Image (tube, rainbow over all chains, first blue to last red):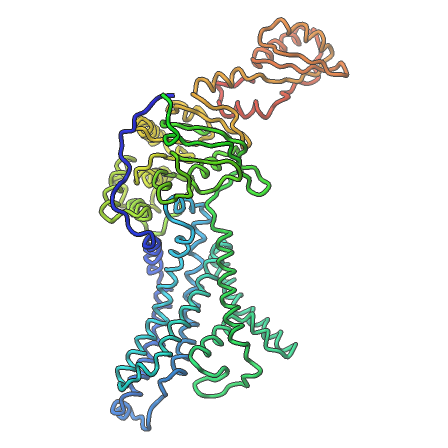
Length: 298
Length: 317
């Protein structure tokens, strides 16, 4: 064997912090996403609730403006926990559409093309890979949920004054915690489906099935057996239960109007938390199983 | 010159199973600097061996150390290793330069260092002109070169290249081979996998032949060629007069052994030169000295693998 003397120098320069490296991945994913006209449209639609809510807050706090547009009376709506709860419900639905559109395309190209070793043969772990992909969804979904809601919260506090901000801090907490929980559940589910289902359309379809077909089955189960436990496979119902608890709104109440007897609807909120977190855990297990670097060519 | 353990890629009795499926079995190797080729057909274990030495998978048994390190120390280990995979996935709209730059940022380099090393590695693979074009518009060979650029851009000491010549035109192939050779001469451990030995033997200092998860030959290229050429082959002959055939062939120096079948209608021959054996058998049959029923290699697997790996120059049948 020839004997070689090493004549080059390995890299010995400055290194960035480990925890920042996952932020490299979203860069091109986001660029690609913002090339999509459909997604831009979805994001714009998702801003509508924010604009409507901002308008309501403005008129509610401004009697002169109300008079100018011909509205008389005390106020349009009460800006309270119920207001933000209903707003988050609408934004949560729009966030779901965004997730179903972009989530399934995040991981599957890397797996289909056997490209994971490209990422994982570096000081970059599978956890960081998942974090990088998740951050794409977290960024976008935050833009349509808790970020505008906190702005609205700030607007209301500014217009109301006199201690509204501190008196209603639990609402801000509910906005952030409730949004982050929903974003986590949806994002992990989308990534797990992206990892296991090759076709993007099929993965999006499956995501709709998990949310809506399961809800239908659950409802049928409830009707046949005269129970409410069928709701435990209805993720939308479960998140609404958690949100209602976080915002301190009685279940089955919509804009102050009782729509159903809570006793026939409620799954205990603790159970809802356990199931939603269980779904997250299951998705992580599925990702852990699927995201391996090995290629077996046989 | 003997290398120290921290200058070698060492496999110590390594086995890797994927469930019941064998990846590689009982591999013991010590790979020094220079160009080493892993040669074997599909499923022979080349990629498994590469994944083991790049820390992407762990051995089921045994230990792998790359220049004294294991993947349990990922920060140091992955800086030593550059991997040019067979496959890739590029984000839509990304350019070659951005791709290499991003992989360096994943290594933790700062913007300036990453940008400088991106330029340097693109120059080495002769991709500067096309660097700012979108990867989607690249030919297969250009994609291969961009992958190569990302694998050398962080200055690794071990460069693992999985089928790096696939899809390259003759010019790019020659350039890549020259680059591998140069990197090897600079003291880098360059590990190249290939289906065909004579594709890589010109630049290889060492070759490792793999089949079905086992190392079947290793060493310097000429030694392996000689080993293959001298590898005894077993050939089964069914004929009317096997005793006559044995007597006729025993005078030949390439015949090592002849075993008569119990039914007296066949013979198993071990020879170092199957080509000569077949010529002589052909002549005997033409002379009408025996009637032939069947002739078949008894260890066809090994033979066919060697023939496949070595190509026509080393073919013995």
